[in-house]
Amino acid sequence: MTTARQRQFLFGQIGWMLGGVGILASVGSLTLEYAFILSFVGLVVITALTAPIHTTVEWRTRLRWPLLVGTIVFAVLVALRTFGKFIRSL
Image: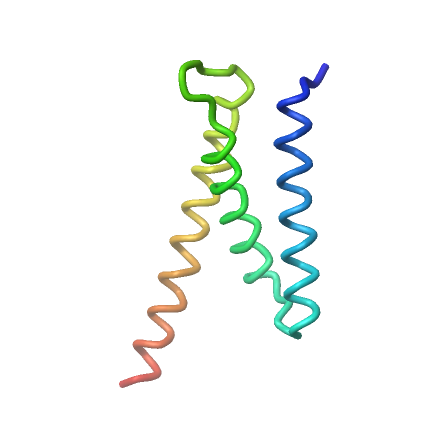
């Protein structure tokens, strides 16, 4: 059974993703890479903004793995882009 906070978090994340994909599509920049980065940044921001200050909620501890995997994928994307630009500059 979901709580109101879980639904609020989920609706915030889905709204961020749909809004971001809509903006990317409207400016003609919709790629899988940009959609992932936008969604990951949204997950990090919403997780930080909705974090309770004085308690630890059990369902929020499960966010650790998606955040860790997203951070690794984000770092790989940044490394590939940086390496590609470095190679082109030589």
